Image (tube, rainbow, N blue to C red; front, side, top):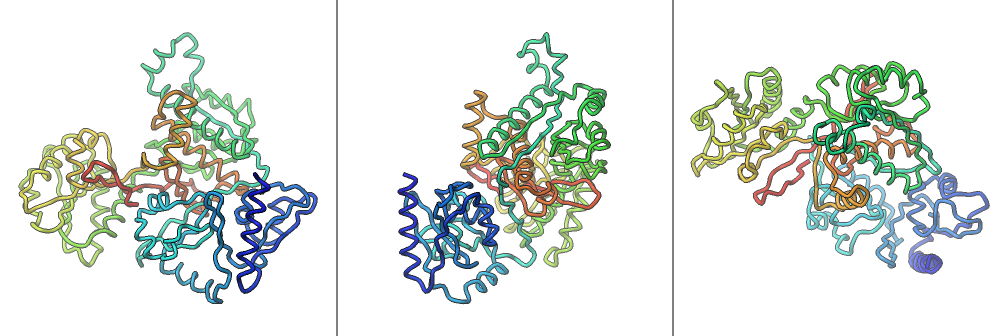
Amino acid sequence: MRELKLVLFLCLLTFAISCGQQKKYIEYKVANGETMRTIAKKLEIKTRDLLRLNPDIGRRPSPNTVIIVPNNKSTYKLKIQKETITTFPTDVENDTLSSVAIDAEKFLMHTVKKGDTFYNLTRFYNVTQEELILLNPELSEGLKLLQEIKIKPIRVDQIEDKIYEDEIQEAVSLKVALLLPFIASEYDTVSADDIFDNSRLANYVSDFYLGAELAIDSLRSQGISIDLNLFDTGRNSSAITRILEENDLNENDVIIGPLYSEEANIVAKSIKKPIIFPVFSKNQSKFISPEIIKTAPEKKVFSEALAHHLKEAYTEGSLTIVSDYKPESDAHALKIRDVLQSLDSVKEVHLLKATEGYIEKERFLEVFKPLTNNWVIMTSSDNVLVSDVINSVISLPDSITAKVFSIEKGAAFDRISNNKLAKLGFTYVSDRFVDENSQTTAIFNKQYIAKNNTLPSFYATKGFDITYDVLMRLASGNHLKATFENGTSYRVESKFNYSKQLFQTTENNGLFIIQYNEDLTLTRLK
């Protein structure tokens, strides 16, 4: 079958090429000892592009294997659909490349990769298939491999994330240390039921590990050699000190963990390798070591993300910010107010603070306007205040409608009926987005259930996302921090958009803007 597919591919490709102005592709016979990587380097093209041209050829083809290579550095574009392979016409006008460059200045562009479908493109970029075809009429014939397509116009004030593309270096080998508080010595005589019924930490650690283990299994199946070293950090810092004394952790390419900020600082003083801090800690803002990489965004980034979204989305109507008297809530409120007041179209931003934990409904009616937008931005996580505000704005006169925003969906909003949140178009910032309809989520859930006989928890998914992302980036053969400059990555539920600053701790700023729909579904706005 492999030979048949190769012959079919060569025949179709040869026929398509012969119809054009010149041969855009030529045959190349692999010499003894050559790999796809060395051939790509010789031709000054990317290995992944050469592999896309030869989908039935592995990374180490046998000597005398005939492969297809570009005749020059022109952009080549193919479509692979089941067993049918088509090519773009080769009589391309001379100004094709210049027109693509012009498009890139005006539109967010995407290069079609193997496995791309309309479904995953529309979900990823938050556009419809109709919008894609309107911008790219040629898409009515389907997606073609390596095709450059327009996604959506770029606004002057909008900066799109550069998307990180996974790339695996040939014969890459990684060594990883995973530092987690299993506290195994204390659980020797305790039943599993008692452990997990009474210890939240045990649940977190075990689930995180199971997710990380699945990530490593997945990466190994893709040809990455991974040497995993597990360390039990116990219940106190003395165990960390002992681990550092008895083991040379600098032999590892990366250290994932420990979970506690004080322990991360201890490790950072002795280790000159990337240290992945996998949880959020109120003390993580105090990290100063350039070796530490924070995977959980700081809370200030949440309010900055919401302020930026509001600034982009606002057109007209009233703006009201609700805070309590707690310093953190007030600081977020003032920051968002300053951003909104910088808009020429905004005449006033109302700031309402709770009195004895409540805000009277009449105070909203004083600032709300009929027949226009009325946005309420909440910076408080107080249970009573959140409930009070939601109940007030959902029971307004018919002529007045309101939409509620929050810097995050904490426990206070979990207590609110989803029907109420949907009616208010509740929009919030989050460091995770669960898309139950995505193929990635379905595959992850299926593999996790097959291995562990249960659905993955939030902690398991986080363990998978963090481990997979870090190791996949390292598998490129580049230094981990160097890969952060190559774009934002999206995994099962997480977004990793790292800010790299010289001699400082690296931070993840990857956040989602999520909105409740009337049918109780969620939409990722950004």
